[in-house]
Amino acid sequence: MADEEVLQRLDRIIAILQLANHADIEEGRERIRADDLNAAILEAASKETAAGKLIEAAQKAAKGSPSKPTVQRRIAALVDQGALERNGAGPATRYKVTGLV
Image (tube, rainbow, N blue to C red; front, side, top):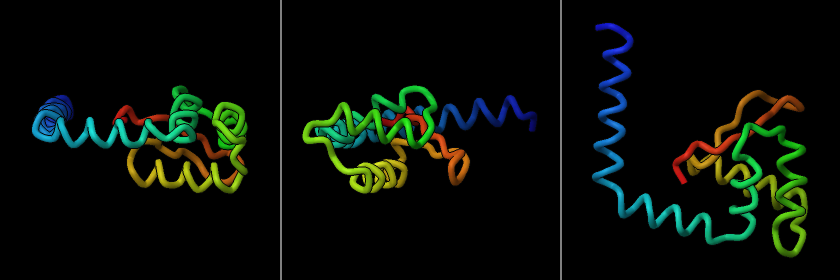
């Protein structure tokens, strides 16, 4: 099977899963984005962003100026939920939204 055919089948599976789970996906999206800090992180990571810059941008945009550890924990949670993708490690770590939420 050619790579292109595999990719087409995977895209079709993704579309079917999104249709079948649309209500749950929308509910999760609304719940995650309703939180001010989550929304600030996701907005700041709309393009691939270095971890330090993402934390600073989220702290500035979110209400109440959350602490760095709070933002770091929230970023980790968003990665676990599939809303953010982490690339690299250590000081070279970068994040970007996955498009799921």
